Length: 80
Image (cartoon, rainbow, N blue to C red; front, top):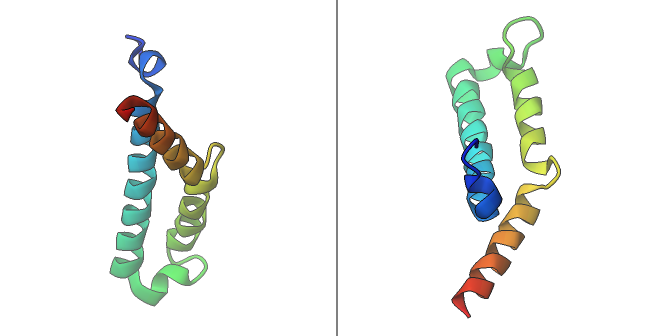
């Protein structure tokens, strides 16, 4: 963000990244549900490719697990 919001509060950026990963997962699941088995056939749709790509999103460095751990530490530090 141009205003430096994420520099002042990286926890906000972590929360945005976690929310985006959840949104990607939900979108891909909806596509798979709407296309059914056809989505997995080569050449019929891009659902299979998008499912593989979406599976990669939560493990990109830093992973969602790492982000959640950092948020938990941040909350503990600020609560004390």
